[in-house]
Length: 115
Image 1 (spheres, rainbow, N blue to C red):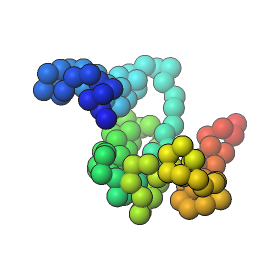
Image 2 (cartoon, rainbow, N blue to C red):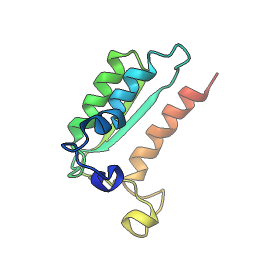
Image 3 (cartoon, rainbow, N blue to C red):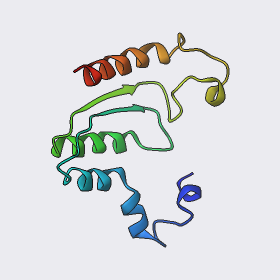
Image 4 (cartoon, one colour):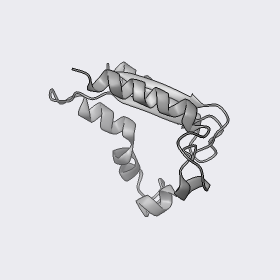
């Protein structure tokens, strides 16, 4: 999947992969005095496409750079944990795992968007 997006391998174009890395971008962004953003990172613990360790490491770096960060993992789901028609088949917002994820997203947004 990443090879399709990048059109090259990490071995052929190491710098392109570094530049595209969210961790690298956070390091750059936090050097800008205008940067003010919060992150809500969600992952499926059974992800076989992107290791859950990637999300955990991203959170660690965000916190090292004093970026407000919340996280939530979906214990029994993989990469495509979001239950929507075009990804996993017919389902709705009131079905699992949306029922456990959506309240967390709403709580985060309410806290971040309240002045």
